[in-house]
Amino acid sequence: MDGANVPAGSPITAFVYDGSTPVECGHTLVQMQEGQSVYAVAVNGDDPDTPAKEGAQDGEAVYFWVDVLGERRQAQQSGIWHSAVTSRLDLTIAGPPATATPTPTRTPTPSATPFPGGRKVFLPLLTKLPPLSGPLTVVVFQEGSGGYAGVKDATLDAWSPYSSFGADGVLRVHAYDVRSALLMFDLSSIPKRAYVAEARLELYAEGRTAEAPLSVAVYRVKRPWSEEHANWLWADVGQAWQEAGCNGPVDREQAPLSSVQATRAGWWYTWDVTLFVQDWVQFPESNAGVLLRTPSSSDWVEYQFSSSEASNPSVRPRLTVAYRAVSP
Image (cartoon, rainbow, N blue to C red):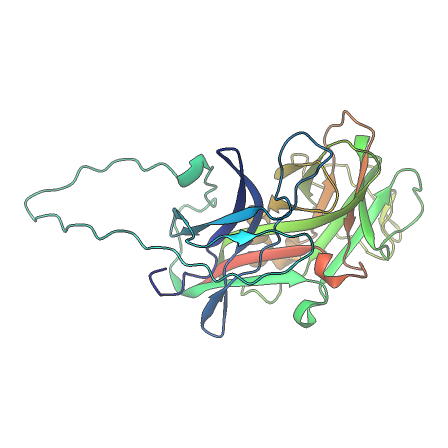
């Protein structure tokens, strides 16, 4: 921005146009590497089998928004989309225009400023923001990336209630809660005294059983479980779920934090889990991960998401966390 690095944690949104309407098709956060602001964003392609435009088509221009300090600006560059092609694009944006300094005799009247794009702002449940120090740190947790080995996950299957699927390469979420998925990230590398500005869970849907949508919600799990032994009936050896499928109030929170509508395979899906991660950082013993399940269904369909054991490391589950250190 004006020749300077934008802050780490600044959101970048890729979009294409459907006529005159922008269609968002990729999201990421800026990271800081060797003193430079860098980013990598997966830009999804359009599904030709659906009438709505959901992503880019071959040879189509892709544009970018960059959110800096609560203000959205469009990058001065655009890219050309091609399937399975990686391109480098150095984005630049213009900073805010200079404003005149008000005279000491006049006090401007405060006015409400709407959040850009009309998006909701989720405030942390804190009565007072603690003192912060240092820059915003952005870290991406993904099994096998940078030596990280802190993910455990497993599918819970009502059709195979005694079988454990912790070693499978996919996580299965089926309509009518027939199958659901447990997922947990070790966050011990984040200081306990840290303020989490944003946390995003990303899963890659590599397959589905029918051309139908599925609502997938994330629920906070409240009790420990074993990747090796968890199944539809048991959280661990000798430790039964209160209700099968991790469905009791002792097993998990009964209301989901967020939900997305899965509509196609070959696509990344993102859930906002900021509130969960803030608690897990401050109280590591409370981190039992999340359960992904469908809260309601109208179509008989299953989506398969790449797990932490997927043969392709780049499509394994990702948790991106942006945080600031908190002064003692």
